[in-house]
Length: 253
Length: 288
Image (spheres, each protein chain N blue to C red):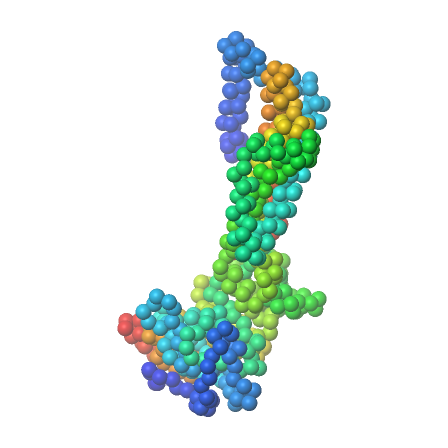
């Protein structure tokens, strides 16, 4: 407990120090409050508009979960397919790099043309940016199985599918979880960007606050999206911890 | 000690030596390059003939024109200095490595009943002891409802009844090796190939596992080929000790006969005479 306190205390002191300096700077008029609202103003706005912010957060969360679920299912399936059929990997994987390199802000208008305004576009946006880390990590995990275990399995001449299901997929679980952890942050970015263009959720809330010059509300929206992403990462960490505590999915004994 | 530089061949090998040499199908593991049933009526368990193994970019053969036979039920210790090719020979017998020339034949009645124990336990970290032992049956499609009792009985007989649900990281080195041994035994092998399985263990555990192996041999009617670099272990566990040299050949082939084998045997003059003789030759080979 004391060790944990000693570990976390500097961060908390820094945070409160930062908020205090920020509040002082704004209150003393060094920076205009319409450019940088005081933390107390952001807090008051958040309380005042909490129902709107909460609903927008839930809407964004739903899009993230949809996008992430789709990228998880497709990413893992594609990675297993690429691993099992190398020619498929050589033919398709180079084009999957598109998902890693595409600037989502550039493709979002195209998504609106395809899927129209609303949730579908936002989900597609979250899906596109979060697919590649899961795909790439799963593939790496499948390829980097312990050679000693591989040799031991091969003694029993298993079918290709048995080798994949009993050795390679369990070995890849830590890699899949790492990919999921990276993807959850990216899916949040994808969803917010999608909402800027297609409407709904925190992205739309931030954008409309910007057009109304409500910088305090912009800050509330940004805080809400940061907290949402952080909670999602913590959830993934919690699930990973529980899963790995139940079964030690490590590369080698 | 006699028969240096050659093989003190048992009678059956002379008979097998008369068999016509045949081309080897290198696409098959060695134990599938079998002699015919008519030949095996008089065959040994393992017949190695003019075996050569060379690796690419290595100046000399790891195994060089090696021939020997192992009669059924005989347990052989394979001894030699580091890097002399003991493990390679064992891997060739199992079919993990492809041979370069020559022939390795396993009696067809025994060929499907080979099991291999690696130097490291090689347990699957996310599987419990029970699940690790069950793995070969799952991979070969032989697992059924009744195998659960068999696995538990086997683990119990190896002193692991309380450790059935433990993961490898929760087991000591000796326990992990016993699980590895159970995994090799669950397929009911007739020939067990062991590659220095006790090398990394402390002496007490090592002695216990040596006795366990002798006990399994008696109970399960097993024969084994045991690779080790411990002379005392080789003499204790082998009906016959093959000492390999660094030219990839068998330097000494010695049959060892003791009426009974338990740890007290190691204190007897007869045992120590064998050990001293092998130790002298071993030192000469290492210096060569």
